[in-house]
Length: 477
Ligand SMILES: Nc1ncnc2c1ncn2[C@@H]1O[C@H](COP(=O)(O)OP(=O)(O)OP(=O)(O)O)[C@@H](O)[C@H]1O
Ligand SMILES: [Mg+2]
Image 1 (cartoon, rainbow, N blue to C red):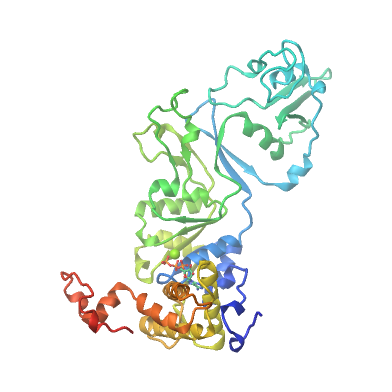
Image 2 (image 1 turned 60 degrees about the horizontal axis):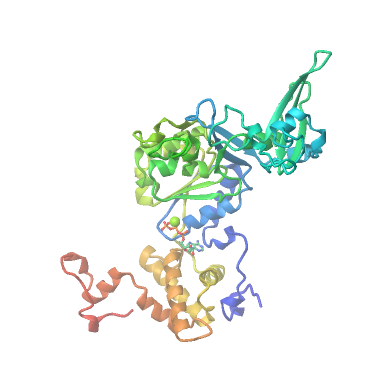
């Protein structure tokens, strides 16, 4: 039975958890309204508020509302200048794919010179076979040697396409592209006008021409959280290889290119916790990335073998979601803050909400979500829910000095999990009110545990290694 009214609830089983990630976030309706707008219009946001009130949750919900990424970014071996890998951007463009739905052509229809080079025709006996086969099945000679153009680099894969230019009798010039895909051969004839070769074709030929490394794949999470905040992590790097690009021992330049969080968050959300603790030079770099929507990848270690390698203009079109405490607002680089507020929203989150039936129901919904997410604890009986509401009011009173329900929910979530563990220990079918009461005693932060032992002056003498030596006097509530 799924109910909507607080009075009909027997346990959290009766509560429907919304599918929409935004609806799972309780008590932040105003913020959600702005955040949804920010996603739609691709604006940056700054979420301001204390720990555990759903800042990360909002960031994730934003990512879930974004369309699938359209671009895939690769770096490719550059035969002319290996230390400047070629940047390739493929677009997922359904329309093009269908427009150029070419049919494979039979091997026999392929001009001999093309068939030789693609490794379809055996030069020795003239027999046709799949290009993936290196040995001719008719004369058992190796046919791959014929498609090893001299300019090819050691790390290259086999070439999968040939362009054939023919000058017709009337002086017209025809360019045909033959390419191999999954052992089938396709022909694309470039129109006489200057129409560029369609992406759908290019993506099937160029990409396999030389070895490449996909650094930002189509299939990727759109929520990228930056934790360590080093320059390498933020803006990418080129790895050092003690053997450099030595053909036998080293690794090719492009293989060592590593994207940064700004690139991985391309078309998605770049979520940065504690924006204020980020070093000023990284804040400045971030500002550049936000302005240009492109950022070069270069080695951060200027003495390594990667130092010569650079890839310019790597796309990084992300939505920045910065999270910060009110008290730290001042330490954000003014230009960065300006950039966010000028092109987005600064949002102050609620730490509590008024007590009414709707908000009580939302708190129940929160409890249900925490239980289901945890997966290891039973549902909460209504008596436990009543107890949790008491705790919620208590937290609101002690932290925010209001008569309300708290939105500092990480703490409340912790109590629910401890209560759940106690219910499991008791082999109860539901979390009951006594489990919540006991959880509250257990889940007290160490500071308040000490305070209840030695009183409010506990921090006055930090040289004492406080323990529970006066545990008989412990105030349990
Ligand atoms: N408004 C909310 N609605 C529902 N659940 C919430 C809400 N706020 C917090 N939670 C719960 O608390 C957990 C912690 O929230 P979250 O990680 O989003 O906090 P935060 O504000 O990012 O904290 P921090 O500043 O420490 O990173 C969430 O995973 C969720 O279970
Ligand atoms: Mg967080």
